[in-house]
Length: 367
Image: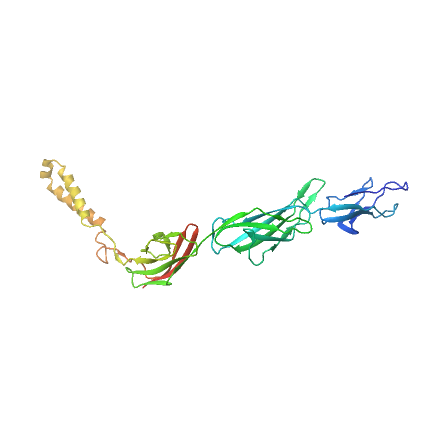
């Protein structure tokens, strides 16, 4: 806004300040000093006048040479600004598990640099408001700003959020902005949120007890498909996590479709002796020695029986050393593998069907 103050007394150019007001009230942007040409203008522009019919005046506050004065009213109409609204869902909206809360957000866009849009946003599925507490949602306004002198403008905007559980199937989600006194309402384009039927995975018992290492134990696992679920879960040794050392798991059957059960078997290993090199080592060493002697000429074999005996003795010594030299103390050179250790651990079994994953945990005790 701009005001020109003209002096009629020949005292020169008026000085002082000008205050702009509308509808008899100060606009609230402060007073502006007259320049050396007797004019004053808002430095950045005014973006907060509400929509509707207004009467704007400039009030000259006077100086030592000129009396205060008020301009004639200038009728001004401020129209409601248009809006656009876009709705977004969580990043995994194409694969949402049944019963999962889905975050929805509506972004209200404007071309205004004034007050942010308020009012409400209603989220709809298939054109019907989602029956969730808190829907519609109050829009949170974010004010814009601008500068008419350098042409810099930041548009106002609004935001509304809703967390909701959607039914199984394809859900066409839209958002409807109600508008407010400054902005017109708008409706978003639809987005699709796919909710897949889920399943429940559980163990019939919380624990497995095995009497001693080397034994095995079982537990029944059940898969219960929810309405519409028809997926297949494949089980393997990789489905178990947290097994103790030298133990394995298996499933019978190895897969369940839609609804059913499988028996989990955990097998352990008893303590046992470690495998040692057998007589084959002696045979190999001795055979190599005899082969070397055979390669000697006939004459050499007749003349060097003492050499033959020495080589055989050396071969025997090498073989004994390679077997541990008859190890000192404890069991004639053998090593003991303790097998699966006794104790308690938590075994987690994972069931996966497409993007759906569930786990159940069992306490494994080996006595």
